[in-house]
Each structure stands twice: as C-alpha cells, then as structure tokens.
Length: 365
Image (tube, rainbow, N blue to C red; front, top):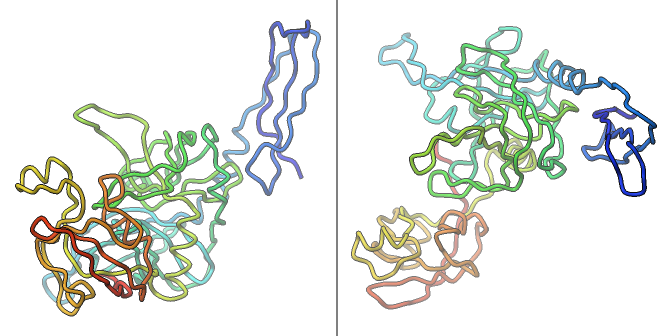
C-alpha cells in the first residue's frame, strides 16, 4: 500500500519549454524513503491542496497510548512518608511485557518510580538497568497487561528535512504534548558528563523539560529517537530550535542488552579522571595538554592491579588515542571487558606502557 505524503505543483519556465509539472512523492508503508517520483506535465496553473496533516494526526493517534509519564521520587525521611519529586519526565512502552525506555537522567537516584499510563492509571516501576555514563538510556519494568508498545523505526533511514514529531509530557503538567518539526541533522554528537554521546538526531521540534525520555516519531508512527537534551545557550548566545534525540538504533541495542542481561556490555578500568585540554593543563601546571589525568584509583580494580598511579596521564588505550575530540570515556566504550590492552601513559614527564586487563563495568545504582 502506498501512502501519499507530499503533492506539490512545480510552476515556471523549465529548460526545453516545459511550463510546469505536477510532482507527487510517494512513500512505501514499510520504508522511510522516497521510492519514486511521479511527474505529470500540466499545461497551466492548477490549485492543489494536500497536506501532511492526516499522516501526522494518524501517527500521533497511534503513538499517544504508548507514551507515559514518569514520576521519580527520592526516599521519604520517615516511614510511610512519600518522598519529594526528584524528576518528572516521559517514557515509551516498547513491549507488552512491561518494558519502558526513558532517559537515565529522568530516573537517576530515584528511590521510587511511578509510571502514569495514557489513561491515567498509575503503576509502580522497577529500574531494570541503565547505561550511564555512555548513553542516557534506562529501562523500567512495570506490571504487564493492557499495554500498547510503540514500534521502533529505522533511525538510519532518517534524513535531514524529514518530518518528525516529538511526543511527551512538556513541563509534566501538559500531558501528551505534541510538537512537529524536521530532522535538522543526523549522526550528531553532543558532549555530556565527559563523553560525546554519538549517533544523535538533531531536531527543531520543540522539546521542553518533561519531554525527556519521550518519543520522536516519524509520520508512520514509528519511534526513531528519544529526546534527551536541548541546547539553550552557546557561548553566551541564546539558541533556538536545537534539540537532540537518541537514535532508535542505539535504543534497540542498549535496551535489548539490559532486558536480556540486566546490563550493557561496557569495559571498566576503575579510575576517576579529568579530561585534559590545553587550558586545564595550563591551570594545573602540566606539560601534557591531552589525555586523561588520573585523580583517584579504586580498590581492587584493573587500573590498580596494572600499576597505574594517581597523577598519571593516560594518553592511549589499545589503538585509540585520548584527545579533546575523543575523550577517555569514548575510548573506553570502544573496548571490551576481559580484553587486555596496552595503556600508554605519562608519568612525571616520561612515557611508559602497561598492559591492563579490563573487566565488566558494574552498574551504578
């Protein structure tokens, strides 16, 4: 079945003497790319009225029952006393078994998590797992029954200029809010918590507090991303219309591992660090301007066992150099648990190499 998306009239002189052409772009139901243009010559001016409204409203209608509100609370001080709201956000039902994806920052540190379904029903949720600090993805679990999952689309098929729709709970008070925009860019990276989160979709669809963890859908009603952050200011300048969503490809990989294994496969070294820039190095009186300066080392960790010391500066791990554009955590996420890699570091102005066997990262509560 073919869904007609855009019908436009191209009017004006064309080389060769063609006065105008009626162009219809068609989209396959199970693909997100234009599969064929239909061009019909016309001999004059014709008024054509056709919009995307029906496609958008149908997509939203299908998606709304799958988008939930999430209330995260910190623990109460007295027995039987509810905690104070810690975070208010959104989530998306991804299967009938009760699994919900959201942003890790929506549920971080919560002692109690409540999911409010589209019809207003409240269900207590359990944090099944998360992928902090590598991605801002977390998976919750609620009791099954009466749940409508939102299908995941192919984020790799999203192209700049494509219509996308953000569905979530803006400011929490405005439940099931819908905003429409375009994919402003794909394959973006955005630095957060010392790591460049990668494979993001940039959009100009309005995203506000409370939208975090909701759905970015295409006109087929498929989830292609999850709103995670908004750029409000840059170097003191106010910014408009720049929001980022985690791609459905990342969501599928991370959530799939959490549901299957309770965690994501991530390597662990066991250090606290500061990523160096020339400015930070100068402020600390260091002669090395890049790398990860080690501020502390955990007990019984791969770093400690390998002989890494506080004040060492890690320059490379395995085949990957640590730079301003590729900081320590981005290098670490390219490595695997149980892998033994050479770690090149600077110690008191001299370079040395140590072999380190990484382990599986333990999830932060």
